Length: 188
Ligand code: IMP
Ligand code: MG
Image 1 (cartoon, rainbow, N blue to C red):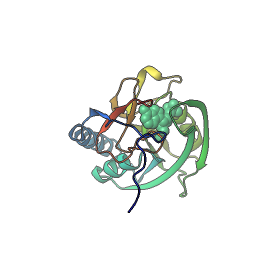
Image 2 (cartoon, rainbow, N blue to C red):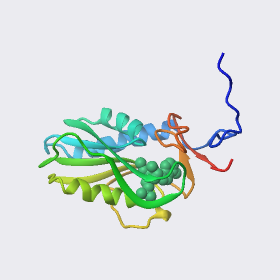
Image 3 (cartoon, rainbow, N blue to C red):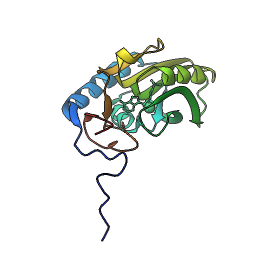
Image 4 (cartoon, rainbow, N blue to C red):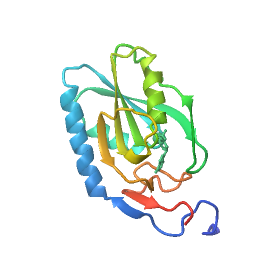
C-alpha cells in the first residue's frame, strides 16, 4: 500500500480551488475562438499553432480540434517563474520549435498572460524565424497586471488578479488537469 502524503506537505492546497470559469463556459468560449480563427485564416494556407509548454497543452488540444482549417502543431517551452508564483521578469527559452516556420502563419497559443513579458519575448523570438505573420491567442489574461503592452489577438477571458489553476494552469505543478479554471490561495 502506498502511504498517503501528508496534506501539510509544501505546496499542497488544503481546500479545493474555487470555480472561476466553469467547464461549460470554457468549452463554449474555445468553440467561439476556433470559429473566429478558422474564418480569419481561411485561404491563408497552413497555420502553425505554437503551444507554449506546459500550461497551454489542454487549451491547445481542445482549440486545435475545433478548427476547420489546415493546421500543424508545434511546441515551445520557456521558463519565467521559479517553482511558485513569484515573477522574475526574465524569460528563458527552454525548447524551440522543431519545424521550419519561415514564410508561414504562426499563432502562439498561451495559457495565461500575466505581466506580458513571456508573450512579448515569444513574439520577438518567433518573428526572428521569418514567418509570414505572428498572432497571439491566450486562454486568460490578468489585464490589471500588465507591465508591457502586448496584443492578444484572440482572448478567452479577462480575469482578476488572482492565482488560477486548472485547464492546463498550475501552481507548483499541481491542479493542471482540473476541468475548470479555479482560484487558489497559494498560502492556503
Ligand atoms: P507573464 O510573462 O508575466 O505574462 O507570465 C506568464 C506565465 O506566468 C504564464 O505562462 C504562466 O506560466 C505563469 N502564470 C502567471 N499567472 C499565473 C496563474 O494565475 N496561474 C498559473 N500560471 C500563471
Ligand atoms: Mg505559460
